[in-house]
Image 1 (tube, rainbow, N blue to C red):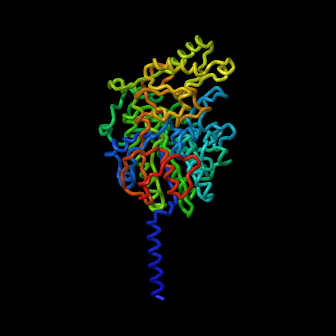
Image 2 (image 1 turned 90 degrees about the vertical axis):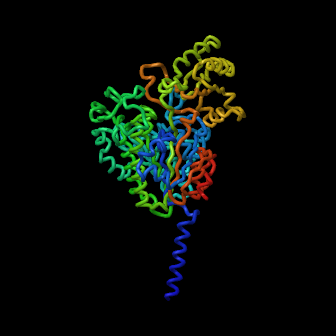
Image 3 (image 1 turned 90 degrees about the horizontal axis):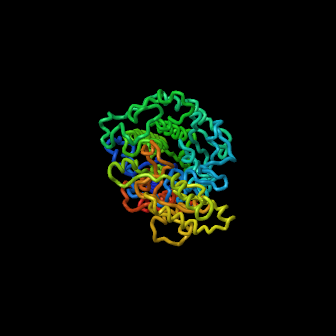
Length: 547
């Protein structure tokens, strides 16, 4: 009997070792963390001030993809999240921007707007949203199609950043309601909020955080990686006369009827991280044999980045504090799930251009192109030549023509586009102009055109698409606030290069320097989860993770 017992124990121990080391075994949980507007260099620029158990831990013990790029334009939040989780580009998944011009409605529409559903958890319209415009499946959809028992939960401050990662089959996608300060959802997913969400909302955390003051985590003199605090390139919040620390939100929020100001505080990241961990526990993610996915998207870095720019003390402080939230999430995952039971990836939906006026003042290439002025100039010339102002809208560097008038009046669309191209070529700050013929051509020799085509759809996109020169941003018109803050959306490295780190079960500690596309994330998650690739995935597997 003793011999049988020892043989049994030896076999059991051997099986345990094989199970732990076998790369075929799936993780119990995949955690996707997307940081909205994170530049690749933040990992290194702020590294000396990070703690040992947040970003540094991921970098030391995980796989860092040092040359990860978006391979299309435009580089916005909606397309970014959709591309990460579908493994393909906007020309396939359909999310060509955060908002685009709807030719039928004659106005812009949000990428996740859905008038057929209702808000859940609020009386506001913040919940009238869904993945209705997402034309392809996500890795989260593929997981649910294959294993109905698996769970998918996605959370964010922004609606699109929760909805698009969750896909069509999410068990729960939740985002922030600016009217109530609560997490909400829509009837696309469920009729009522789960009890755990209601309980979290009852804590009124957003209201409590708005009674606090945002000061720097460290002494302000230690923020040597950033520029001056009172910068002429930064937006002034509410009634504050200067863009500098401290930010007393109790004072700044006086008289406010919504929670807009809350989302620009570092406390919004804490709020979201706590909600994500509440979801982890309440939904019992990673607790059975069926793999689950938890998608977390931190929106506040983007909101702060737009207002203050990438070289501000505000953005550095946001990332030093975000490091603490990453540490909190990692600590909880390793405590409750175990490092050998989950895989985590961290990336960004886009990066950002330095404030163009800052570039100009530094004698670097950059500036602004004013869309209202361009549209007026185009329509004046088109009226002279064809009798009608044929440009309906310019948005996201897309020019939408009045197709109905062109058709009814039998106007030659190619000639119209040729006139527009000729005028745009004279405008300072415009690099390339592509006509409908260019966008539907087989020309693959133009690298910029290849990126534009991957973000183009005939019905949703404009008839012409243009690219600005490096360092330039589109603005509606010149104003006294033109030089404040910044944005993103271009095909250039300051917008396209983002961090990508993998960590957890069977993930080796290494750096990869070859080029990797953002679409490779889902292509890699599929074999990690032993799933068929989602229907439109075009990315490639990051083979180095499986060595």
